[in-house]
Amino acid sequence: MPVPVPASASGETRTERAPDATAVPRSEQRGRRAPARSAGTGSTSARDLAAWPLCALAIAAVVYAQRWSTIEVRIEQAGRVTAMRTRASSVGQFLVSHAIDVSAGDLIAPPLETRLREGSTIRIREGRTLRVRADGVAHRLRSQGQTPRAILTSLDVPLGVGDVVVVDGAIVGLDDELPAPSADRDARSAPSAGRRVADAAGDVRSVPIVDAPGPSAEGPVSEARRLAALAAAPTLDESLSTIEVLRAVPVTVVEEGIPLTLALAGPTVGIALRAAGLHLWPEDVVRPSLDAPLAGRRTVVIHRATSFQLDADGEVRQARARADTVAEALAKAGVRLRGKDYAIPPGTTRLREGMGVQVVRVVEDFLVREVSLPFRTETEADHSMALDDSRVVRPGVAGSKTQRIRIIYEDGEEVERELVEESVLSEPQAELVAYGTQIEWRSIDTPEGPKRYWRHLRVLATSYSASRAGTPTWVPWYGRTRLGWEMRKGIVAVDPRIIPMRTNLFVPGYGVGIAGDTGGGIRSYHIDLGYDDDNYKRWRQWVDLYLLEPLPPESEIRWLLP
Picture (cartoon, one colour):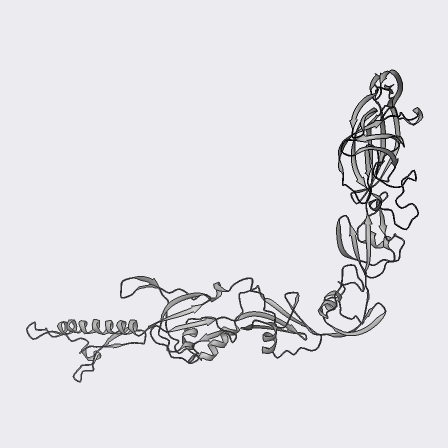
């Protein structure tokens, strides 16, 4: 009877017949005619047809076993999660069978020997691919290290005093975080897609189905050898960071004539000096130049620039210059003196460290203006007019002139103004005023009876006494007036230019008095009413003043009052 058996592990089947003891060899069957088969007892063809259902069942069983012998595994890599079906039994076997690129610098969780189950998750955090050059040896590695110290420690690269680390051309600290990669590796890391299959829910999704590794012509494939081969495979990432260790060499640095031996490291003189903590200003002079290679150098000379405080153009800043004088320092600082500009201290002054230098901007300007020329007033007596009356006989006319004035500004502020030139456009014409000289006597009632007066004035009246006049008591003229009289009520201090001395006068509320004193504060239309110390009365008000008879000498009368 035919029995279906698997022909190979791939699931193919074949049909084999059991050996028959009564079977006649084929050679003997030749020439014989086959006996007729009876339909009633069953023929050979009927038996063959009955075996085919068993063969189909065996094939289905093999296909079913192949389908349900795989498990679904999730892999997280490069920020993506992918579901796969596989017959791999461990994490390591899964990575090999799916040709997923991993290396010694990658973190894989769980470990490679962990057995897989339905729904297991494999997480891969890839290491960073770096180039490291140190002591003439170039390294290429993938690492989880985030700082130069961690990378160099993993390679057993020691660092000596003064050695520097350069990452992508820039000096960094050992514990500085490495810059982010400029490109990702998603294209290389992505798993290959498999064929489309339908799951139990009927949804269609893309999952890879990869057979577990089997024996080859050379024998079973070693999982460790496969992983090693993957790790040694060339990377596709060409944007790699480069870490370079520059070894320090002894160099004599001469600064302002003082030698100092330092351990310097760097591609150029400037980088090496800065890495050693020597701050250089752009104005400093270094021999050899800062961009000269450090290799082979044994001596570096530094000439420091002088620092000074510069106050120019409304800005105060710290400046530096390699110069001997203030003028040279200003020129090297880009400050130019123009015209009458000057510096404090002067440009010939020797430049010293920390000196303050002020630049004063001088601007000369000219102003042309027209100025009015006032006319003068001329007077003449008119004996036909009453005293204190006046009239304009001829009005005055103002003239004009032009002036050219030079104005000097220093830092925007005017410091000098000088009249350079002027010219008269028109001369002024004097005004002629006539004043009266005719005395008209009038009468005023006083406590002493009616009195005649010849002039009436409106004045400011204050009061004083001997002790209130401000004269020290020990001087001989204490309590004496300008005329030598003893101070008492009735003596009035006046301005002699308005009221002649010894003129009799009358002030309502005060009484009759005489102009017998003067005072430093008594000017123009201001009088000071005198009192005894015992009967002093305070005054400060505008009052009427009447000048009484007799009339003073005409030479003492001011006919035209201001």
